[in-house]
Image: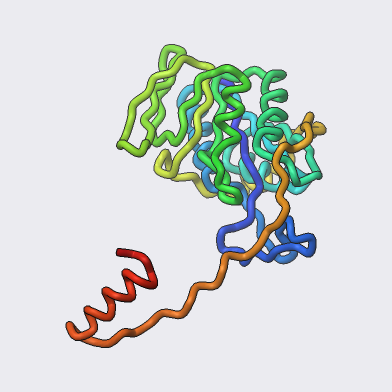
Amino acid sequence: MNIVVCVKRVPDTETKIKVGGDGKNIDPTGVEFIINPFDEYAVEEAIRIKEKEGGDITILSLGSADAQTIMRKAYAMGAEKGVHLKDESGNSDSLAIAKAIAEQLKEMSYDLVLFGKQAIDYDNGAVGVQVGKLLNIPVVTRIIKLELAGGKATVERESDLGKEVVEVTLPALLTAEKGLNEPRYPKLMDIMKAKKKPLDQKDAKIGPPKIEIVKMDYPPSRPPGKIVGQGVEAVPDLVKLLANEAKAI
């Protein structure tokens, strides 16, 4: 079983984000970057498959040289090798990224490709689906359970209508949802070993973006709250405010 897990370097959700001087990107000063949390579920699932059935795990990431830091985190969890697609531009859109990843995957042997359901920076959840389409393999998103047998994957996924059970033939691409597993914490010895594991670096074959960020701004400030009174006497005024100002009713 050859498994490729695609991971992304993203800002920590607890970091206070500031808009950069160009008004189009974030200011990286003081920002802590981590492996995308949904990608951690994908890495953990790959490791569990390897522990149960054997096989190889390859970590694949596209981004600046700093992406290697989060790839080493995946190594410490249990992956053995990786490919870093170097892209210093930082302005590629999801389709350009998907095409570059798909081109690299075409050069690799894989039975299963795993992504997180979305990256927490832009939250579009598009890259994994686009990669699967470009490779012309089955895609199942937001999986919360996975079983492999007889060259097929049986997965349970969440949808707007509830939970669905889907069976696909391998090779396939799956995106991991929270609840699929509980990612392990790497041991100190594994963290040290991760620094010596092989990591190939290649220039990403990435085309020009079709989408451009023209401006990045902060969300508007919320207006202060109002206290309209106390007890049942305040209900009529509260209803008027909800209807006329908040437009909630």
